[in-house]
Length: 90
Image (cartoon, rainbow, N blue to C red; front, side):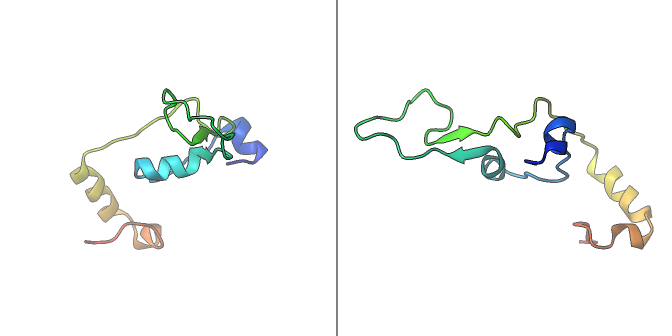
């Protein structure tokens, strides 16, 4: 995501991040130690971290579908299309 192509053209994260913790791991960077006696700003949304604006998306598109319809579509796909994906019969 730090490549010029991703920064200029964008990128797709399929199924990731799944949690807020995952998103923080991608888009936040740990701030260097604060100066002695300096308190963190309590108004900051993520104290001790800064947002990596170089890769932070300007827009996010979330596609949702009914579970039953999505499962049916996957079941109808040929097995070679679902091999090595996160889909499993269970």
